[in-house]
Length: 114
Image (cartoon, rainbow, N blue to C red; front, side, top):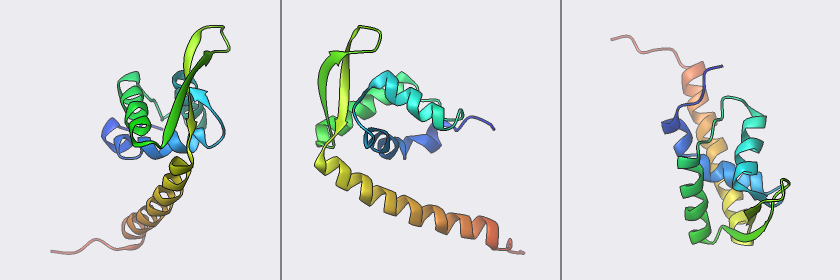
Protein backbone atom coordinates (compact mmCIF):
# COMPACT_ATOMS: atom_id res chain seq x y z
CA UNK A 1 0.00 0.00 0.00
CA UNK A 2 1.27 3.48 -0.84
CA UNK A 3 2.12 5.76 2.09
CA UNK A 4 -0.65 8.13 3.11
CA UNK A 5 0.10 11.63 1.90
CA UNK A 6 0.75 14.34 4.49
CA UNK A 7 -2.17 16.47 3.32
CA UNK A 8 -4.60 13.60 3.91
CA UNK A 9 -3.15 12.86 7.33
CA UNK A 10 -2.93 16.45 8.54
CA UNK A 11 -6.67 16.74 9.14
CA UNK A 12 -6.83 13.57 11.24
CA UNK A 13 -3.52 13.64 13.11
CA UNK A 14 -5.00 15.23 16.23
CA UNK A 15 -7.67 12.54 16.44
CA UNK A 16 -5.12 9.77 15.86
CA UNK A 17 -2.93 11.10 18.67
CA UNK A 18 -5.90 11.29 21.03
CA UNK A 19 -6.84 7.72 20.13
CA UNK A 20 -3.28 6.54 20.75
CA UNK A 21 -3.22 8.17 24.18
CA UNK A 22 -6.58 6.67 25.12
CA UNK A 23 -4.58 3.50 25.86
CA UNK A 24 -2.29 5.26 28.34
CA UNK A 25 0.59 7.70 28.41
CA UNK A 26 3.37 7.60 25.83
CA UNK A 27 6.26 9.77 24.73
CA UNK A 28 6.32 11.26 21.24
CA UNK A 29 8.40 8.51 19.66
CA UNK A 30 6.09 5.90 21.20
CA UNK A 31 3.04 7.63 19.73
CA UNK A 32 4.54 7.61 16.25
CA UNK A 33 5.61 3.96 16.53
CA UNK A 34 2.20 2.86 17.83
CA UNK A 35 0.46 4.49 14.88
CA UNK A 36 2.94 2.99 12.40
CA UNK A 37 2.40 -0.43 13.97
CA UNK A 38 -1.29 -0.16 13.06
CA UNK A 39 -0.45 0.42 9.40
CA UNK A 40 2.97 0.92 7.85
CA UNK A 41 1.46 3.55 5.54
CA UNK A 42 1.11 5.86 8.57
CA UNK A 43 4.50 7.54 8.71
CA UNK A 44 4.37 10.31 11.27
CA UNK A 45 7.28 12.73 10.86
CA UNK A 46 8.60 14.73 13.81
CA UNK A 47 7.83 17.92 11.90
CA UNK A 48 4.12 17.01 12.05
CA UNK A 49 3.94 15.13 15.35
CA UNK A 50 5.48 17.60 17.78
CA UNK A 51 3.56 20.68 16.59
CA UNK A 52 0.37 18.59 16.92
CA UNK A 53 1.34 17.53 20.46
CA UNK A 54 2.00 21.16 21.46
CA UNK A 55 -1.31 22.24 19.89
CA UNK A 56 -3.24 19.50 21.75
CA UNK A 57 -1.50 20.39 25.02
CA UNK A 58 -2.34 24.07 24.56
CA UNK A 59 -6.01 23.16 24.01
CA UNK A 60 -6.00 21.13 27.23
CA UNK A 61 -6.77 17.86 25.42
CA UNK A 62 -3.51 16.25 26.57
CA UNK A 63 -1.05 16.93 29.36
CA UNK A 64 2.66 16.29 29.54
CA UNK A 65 5.11 15.30 32.25
CA UNK A 66 8.78 14.40 32.22
CA UNK A 67 9.84 10.83 32.84
CA UNK A 68 12.34 8.19 31.78
CA UNK A 69 11.97 6.24 28.54
CA UNK A 70 12.47 2.50 28.21
CA UNK A 71 16.02 3.31 27.08
CA UNK A 72 16.73 5.24 30.27
CA UNK A 73 16.56 8.66 28.59
CA UNK A 74 14.65 11.67 29.80
CA UNK A 75 11.45 11.99 27.77
CA UNK A 76 8.23 13.96 27.79
CA UNK A 77 5.23 11.67 28.29
CA UNK A 78 1.77 12.67 27.11
CA UNK A 79 -1.57 11.58 28.51
CA UNK A 80 -5.19 12.20 27.59
CA UNK A 81 -7.24 14.59 29.74
CA UNK A 82 -10.96 14.32 30.41
CA UNK A 83 -11.59 17.12 27.91
CA UNK A 84 -9.39 15.26 25.42
CA UNK A 85 -11.38 12.05 25.88
CA UNK A 86 -14.60 13.98 25.17
CA UNK A 87 -13.00 15.56 22.11
CA UNK A 88 -11.86 12.12 20.89
CA UNK A 89 -15.42 10.83 21.17
CA UNK A 90 -16.85 13.79 19.24
CA UNK A 91 -14.18 13.69 16.53
CA UNK A 92 -14.57 9.93 16.13
CA UNK A 93 -18.31 10.29 15.57
CA UNK A 94 -17.74 13.08 13.01
CA UNK A 95 -15.02 11.11 11.21
CA UNK A 96 -17.15 7.95 10.96
CA UNK A 97 -20.11 9.91 9.61
CA UNK A 98 -17.92 11.78 7.11
CA UNK A 99 -16.10 8.67 5.90
CA UNK A 100 -19.37 6.73 5.49
CA UNK A 101 -20.78 9.58 3.38
CA UNK A 102 -17.69 9.78 1.16
CA UNK A 103 -17.52 5.99 0.81
CA UNK A 104 -21.16 5.82 -0.22
CA UNK A 105 -20.51 8.38 -2.94
CA UNK A 106 -17.27 6.84 -4.20
CA UNK A 107 -18.41 3.22 -4.10
CA UNK A 108 -22.16 3.38 -4.60
CA UNK A 109 -22.84 6.19 -7.00
CA UNK A 110 -22.40 6.02 -10.73
CA UNK A 111 -20.42 8.77 -12.41
CA UNK A 112 -22.46 11.53 -14.00
CA UNK A 113 -22.61 11.56 -17.75
CA UNK A 114 -22.07 14.97 -19.27
